[in-house]
Image 1 (cartoon, one colour):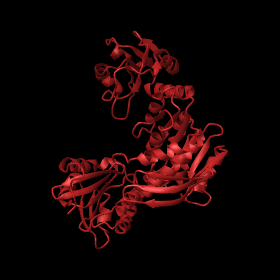
Image 2: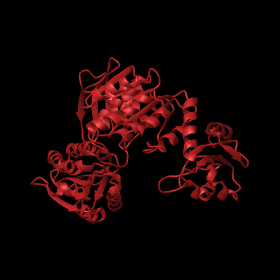
Image 3: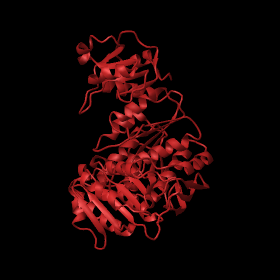
Image 4: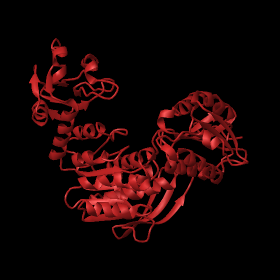
Length: 477
């Protein structure tokens, strides 16, 4: 078993009371009995829908070595002969352990936020910095009030780089999280209309994202997208937070880390950037201008934390898009092959534009079609109808020949679809799914894009099940 924490260290960090025979150490931290690894410490946090105390028996069966439980639940757990650390509040205890993890590490710490590109950039940083040292990074999209302390608590003492994603739906959510993370670099990828239903305008979103600068360590650096329309307000808020070092990345002539040239291809991109006064030529193994923007941010972060740039740049060539975030599948239709681009994890106007740009860049044979399967962009409030209708222009620009729309919010686009585009609309995902499966033909390029809770991942799963992976033998006819 890997050693992450001794029981004594957890007791000291959380201020809890030990019951039973303590293990010498634990190999990991878990809040979910389904993904628990034998030897982990199980924190029985109480969420909005479920209480971890209800799953302690499952955690015992899964091999948990130690249990952090609430004082109020102790009477109900009295009959269990398990090692426990009893605390007033389990989530607060997890936060304390996260703070202790940050205090003991000597790693260079990077925090990432933004309306789009957070997870992709975090994963790109994980991938590229792994070429030059031991890296710890947030799992999946663990970027909220429990995900950030959990990611901190899981940080090994000896890692050299640590990357944390920090998200928000409302003001004042990033502030307490970044003060736990205390990054050396705080990156804002992009300001866009995500969660706009909770804000008056994009300026308010920018203000909330700028909270990430408040947690920077002394002499830390705020890294801002200079091509973003809100760069000036972000710079102002960083200065107001006491940040002395502010750097910019982008194509703008005044960007500290500047994109000089870019060549986009259907399955990758190449670019030239000026990093630390030197020109670097790099290849990105994932397609799309937005991935180049992310890659530029990665090189900027690498330079700021003193990582070896040649190795980091080389690692960009092996970068692949994640499932639900642009991952490509070459699938075999009975009469030939076609391409599926899986963008089913999330959607807002900026990421919709990026996904449709991917579709536009696809090289397809003469008989192939560009097909867009689009679901609702959620949390846009009163702005929702207008922002959905505006997708019509993007579909025209992408050269989409067939469009499938699903969800209540997409009705606005269906009612205003530009002429000349053949489309189908259904309110429910399950009604749309068979239409998409029946429509695909050899040579097609299909992009599936929607907010996660609309369930469009079911469409991707159904396509992967019906059409096997193409091993290179099938040809589009």
